[in-house]
Amino acid sequence: MDVHVVSCEKRSGLKSWTLLERALVAQFRSRYWNVPLCNMQLKNKRSSAHLDKLFKPRALEKILSIFETPAK
Image 1 (cartoon, rainbow, N blue to C red):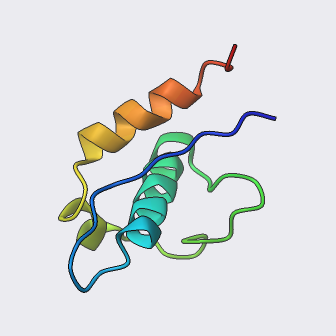
Image 2: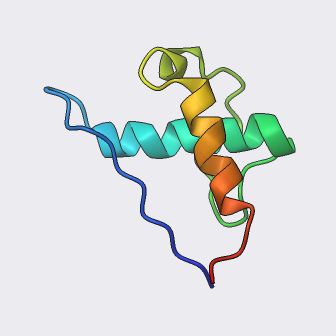
């Protein structure tokens, strides 16, 4: 099992770590047409436009591409 830690800057009044996870799941879903196994967040939601305002989709895509290669 590979474990990866992804974090973001703290934002006043927001649980930014939770929003980052949702944004990554949404990006994963748009890339692979389904949410990751055992992750039910956003399973039935179709829009993630509000998350695009908080995190750049291109940066999220870059993070996902890093996870495609197994850790050494």
